Length: 113
Image (cartoon, rainbow, N blue to C red):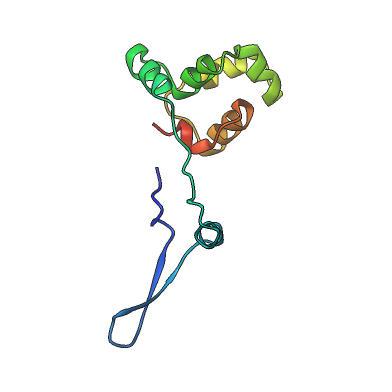
């Protein structure tokens, strides 16, 4: 997972001393409004299910959200059997994880464990 400092750029003067920090606008807004930028989290139940049962993160999330494969497949506009194949993979393409995350209603980074 990314930390709050992953997207920070440090600008230095001619002597190499830090003079400015450039941060993403969302982080700037959160700082000026006094609200911290919340990173997406993963419930302990999801992580434990994936590790204890040896299942994919997508399946652990689907079961945690009490959805069937058919429901998720319908949201992705694919067949249940096609989704079952995607869900069975422990590693998948970023674009696939993004589509699965959207169907589950979670952030794609929450499938990266």
